[in-house]
Length: 107
Image (cartoon, rainbow, N blue to C red; front, side):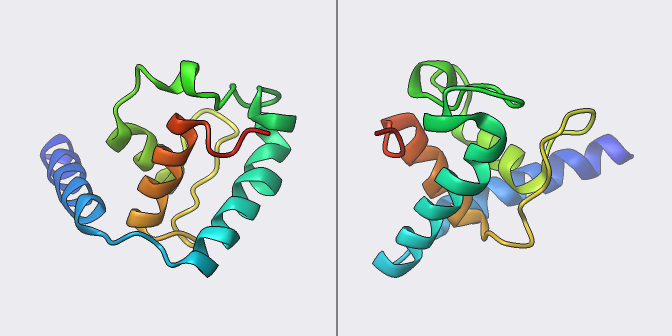
């Protein structure tokens, strides 16, 4: 039963994330700051890896966007990756994933 609920929640999250509009310019600036400062605290300077793995495009390319967005929102059990859903909307997590895969946060 828990597995069915988990699958249904994942499908719903994927639909919500895909339907979300782009964040406005001011929010994009806030999100960029969050990624560089907060994510960078664990994922290293330039997001090249540290306590957490590298967030560079080559490392993220094999992972589906929905998986990465869910990781941002829900965290990863058994790791140091915390959930960010208190601070981010699903569409914002997906925007971050797209920018990470494009190399949009690297100097």
